[in-house]
Length: 339
Image (tube, helix red, strand yellow):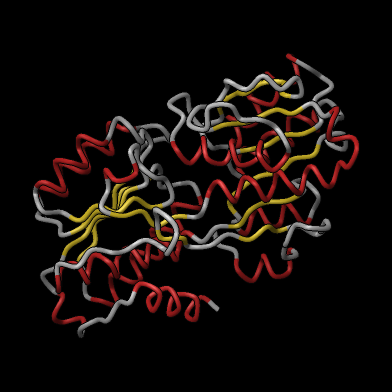
């Protein structure tokens, strides 16, 4: 399955490769938000495998925690100094890191944003990502249809990523709201909505402990909360733990984004109602292919037709499908999962 997906992605980019020996002098960097989140672990796996296949020398860097932009800036400096031909970057601070990205591009380095678009998006040479707005819409639509008439009186909480509101966080939030039938107001900002159904937002740093604490905070604000949108599945598991501690785990519908194997298992077990599955291994492997092609020919990757980025796909995973929202079950989600 993975080999066929990667082959398809390479064809979609129109990539043709020389023998690995010809790329011996090509070096690349992968800079992720952390090196512990399964999403980024799989991303590193995809980049490493493809780099080995193509004979590209790869160095990997990561922030200490999600939101650690300083380590990512230092990594970019190291990549420039090492003469890297390309950088694959999942930025923690999508605005703050732009000047460092510009420095790399000015030095002739191809910079590809993975998963998380920069602000502005064209600050990078290209973006390979899930359609995060669509990912949010899918779980928003699913939650709305699952609740039926009760959706109009729902009490909704958002477990977000970090205070800096990186683009991936904003897109998923706004997408959920649109899918659920909430006016997101400013599409580039979290927290300016005025829909009475919204209990509030809290940040999680994308991990279980953060999800647990954020859920506890929102429960204190309104114990009648019954829908939770989470930035990712580790945060969703933390939210579930907080709910279970007070006997509310059966009263709250949790939806998320990622589609890692632990997350799909959580859907199967009823911890998460539905999740939007993305494909980090594909993002990273295509990124290495693009760097190789740039090194060989100077050609930069092009976005998916009709979009401003190269779309690596998304699928809604749930064992409780609803009318009008396309989905796959956990059996198929498990076959496609990662981590």
